[in-house]
Image (cartoon, rainbow, N blue to C red; front, side, top):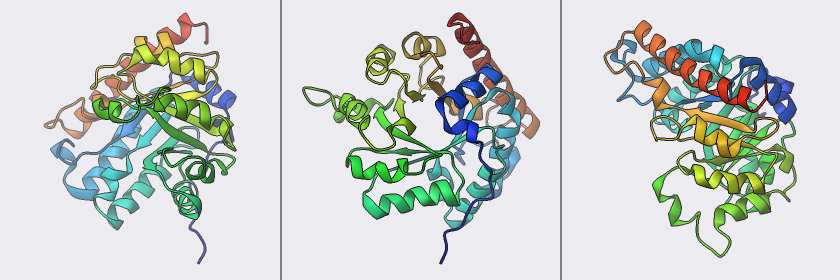
Length: 288
């Protein structure tokens, strides 16, 4: 049986740091919108179940596209519905334009042929441009992903959740620093990004020293308390080097009782506000 191939065409420009930077410059934005369609928070006007989830994601993409360089669907919110949810995810991804990065937030973390099959499922079958990966089983859990030459692998490094301190800060050299430094020797390391939470901006400077040229995917802005200004103060590099993610602050800006149009307008406004802050930081850094 052959592996299904996504119908989504991806842009070769987005597969390189310089090309991604050109996209950032063209939109004056490094905004990533997380697609985390929580059925308890989706406005009731979209209906219920899988159909509501799919319609809601499509509406958010339509509303925020002018301000966004990446979308990050969190697979758990689709997988909760089984095969029907996965089919909806495939349609959501297929309808995202090729000049916008799609990051499959899957946090896969296995070795050998299993890791390769995960990569194949997300890159080839789903059509994602990037996938989040847990690196804690080492090199052979990462290199099956980086073997895809036109795709990005996004390693968990310094995450934004409070319990990150259970493991990520352990050791004479903290584990998150070990992930950053050791992974630079992996095959395909030029196609690595790193998850670095905005809730610890004081550590972003340390991260940037260890991976000066890498792109960082930064969650935690907005609802979790991080700010664009703090992230940029410590994380910007010569090619921007940042994708700042906002999920709840954009998705549910209109509230549970919003009409479809009110929900879209609220998401559009929230994305535009973040993009405006990003433009200011890019201009201050003379990157526009």
